[in-house]
Length: 155
Length: 426
Image: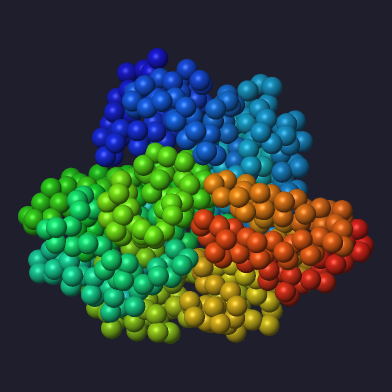
C-alpha cells in the first residue's frame, strides 16, 4: 500500500498533466525516494493510483535507467562511463572501486551499504573523471579521493 | 549598459544564484514587463527571428522560425505548450548545467516570454535526474516567481496566463530527441515519433508544442532588452549571439565559457583551456558532443559556428568539445562512444537496435586485439546502413559520425590493432 504521504505527492504531481498516467515517471521516482526501489507490489499500487495497467507502467519503469526494479544499497554510486571520463582514465578508477567494494557493476555490497552502477555522461566533463553518490556529484577523482569519499559513508 | 556576456553576466562560480529580488535589481524581468506592456506575440517572434538566434541544442534550427510554425489566433488548438529541453545527456556536454544551476530566473523569464510568443498556457522544464543542484535551484526560483505573480493567472495584470512545471526525468539519452521527449512527458517510453507532423503543429497530447534548448531560451530576454542588432553584433559570424563553449580532455584547464559565436578551435584549446597538458599534443577533436564527426590537428583554425564546423565536415552540435591527445587511442574512443549509443538506443527501429550493438562488439574486439581483417569492411557497410534516411530518428546516424570520421582520418590505427593483435596505445 502507498503511504498517505506518497499518495499525496503523487496526486499533487499528477495535477501537472493533461492525463493522470503522464505522472508515471514522477510517481515511480516518488515511491523510489521513499523506499529505495520499486517492488512488484509497489508498481501495482502506483498503477492503480494512476488508473493505468501495471504492464503499461512496468514498460515505462524498465525503460528508464534510474528506476530500480530490484533492491539497491543504502547509497547508489553512479560512475560516469562516457567519453570525457574515458579519456581521463575512468576505467582505472572503476577497477579500484570494484576492488575496494568487492563487487562488480550492478551489484550491492554484502552489508547493503553501496550499489555500484555505470551511468552515461554526468555532464561534469570539466571535472572528469566523475561519479555521483545519491544526489551528490564528485569530480576530479583519483583512487585516493575515492577512498576518502567512501570512508565518509562507511563511518 | 549593453552586456558582452549576457548569459553568464549574473553567474559567479562558488556563489549561489541570484534570488528573485537580486535578479530584479540586476535588471531581471524587465524584458517580460516590456513584452507584456506593449508587444504582440508576433512582434516577439519577429525580434527573435531578426536576431538570427539558432537553436543551441545541437541542430541549429532558427528559433524564430520554429515559433512561427505554431498556429496562432482564436482558431488555434488549445492548450499550446512550451517545453524546455534540459535533458543534456549528450556525452561531453555540460554547458546547460552552467545556466540551469547558475541563473534559474533568467531561464524562467525566457520561458515566460517564449510561451507568450506562441501563446502557450503551459510550460515544462524537462530536466535530467542527475542535475540535482539545478533541480533545487529551479524549484526555488519557480516558487519565488509564482509568489511574485510572474507565473500563474493574468501575470503582471495582463491577459496572459502561464503555468510552469519542472519535470525530472529518470535517465535515458533518447529523451533529448524532441519527440522522444514529448512521449516521456506523456509518461511513456521515450521512443521518437514519426515526423511529420512536427511538434509545433501536433506535439504534446496532440497540441501545438515548441521544444527549445535551455541556452536558446535564456537568450530571449536579452534580445528583447537590447535588440536584434545588438544580439547579432555579439557574434563574429552571421548567426547571432554568444555561445557557451566547453572543452574537456587532457587540457590544462577544462571548463565552459561564454564567448562570441565564431571563435576558433585553437582559441578554445590554447587560450580558454590553457593548452594541452605538458608532453601531449592534439591528435583529434570531437567538436560538439558524441554524435559529431571527429576533426584533426589540421582543423585547429576552424571557426566554431554552425557553418564553419559544417564546412570542415562535422557539426557544431552542442559546442562542447573533447580534445583527444596523441596518447589516447582513437579506436578505444570510438568503441566507448559506440557502447554508449548501443545502450541508449530505444530499440524501436531495427537498424539502430541490431546494428549498434554489433558495431560496439566489433569495435571493442578490435580495441582488445581480437579484430579480424574483414571487420573494417563490416564497419564501413554499417556507416551506410545506419546512415541518414534509414532509421526512425537521428540517434544511429549521429552514432555513425564519429565512426566514419575515425575511419576517414585514422584507418591506419584500426589496421594496426588488427595486425598487431593488441592496442598499441596501452
